[in-house]
Length: 410
Image (cartoon, rainbow, N blue to C red; front, side, top):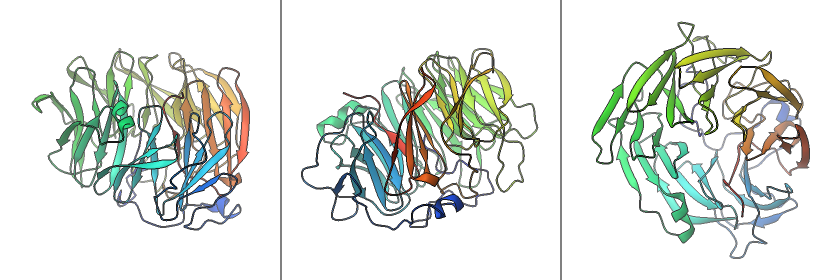
């Protein structure tokens, strides 16, 4: 999931503000940041922004990519060794491309494809204003460009050839901050809305002919897929589920019950979502999460006793729900019962900053490992989810913001 504006609606515009400082109060006590790449302990890559040297130091195993103010760090996913630094000014976002080597980088000019294994940009680009969500499902990767309403669908396996994949395209009726996902049967689900108002979702077939539509999901935001290929998008009053060719609305228990960010797993029919109830808050710091049963069309709320942010949600290898709390612990939840089974200490206690673009601890899960950044200490940690403990930590030259990586290693 890549959310361009995941926070509360009080944020005036989803457009990234270029070149602003990304550090919060805690980060100001750490290292200062500038819009240049730092060689650090790894290979410095690139003489001009967004370019790389002809021969990177080495191929990176199970690469991770973290953003900092001025560029990208590439790390070995097994050792957390910093292997390379790439200059790239501005506020950038990162998501898995869907294969073993590539990561999608959202920049001010559009989506760019980074070969994280080789630490170099491929030259494959999807230009457009306000690049937003990146979704992977059923062997397809879908890019949604908010400023144009353009949707690009491709097979990530085709990125290995170095050429732009031949894929499907779709354009929404009006540009908006949206999201799209292609299902295994070729149906494409996209959100409905305008720059001022978002209302629901529709599904079209491979010929762009409409199959289903629902316009009872105000403020639609985010998506996740569950076991059985049920796909949900969040609303300001619950969640909208598409399953077996039909939409079903699950109402929140509150008049305003916003579920804007979700995490799904093929191992569970239950989705994990956030949950906010104050439409007037400058920034609501919720302590409850939502568990959405896509088979029964039911919603359960669980109070964790700690707040979290939009970068706190993930799923484990067995379908367990994972939430990185501001108490510094990774909360492991049984989605079927809502029981918190384990709390794994990972980082110091923290507070979500008011500006959604500012750095905060971020969770990225791959297989049996959870990776957690700690900007206040310029640190990155690896957590063994099966053992329930932190196994590796590293200190980076600068504080990081976003964190992602390739899908599977070699």
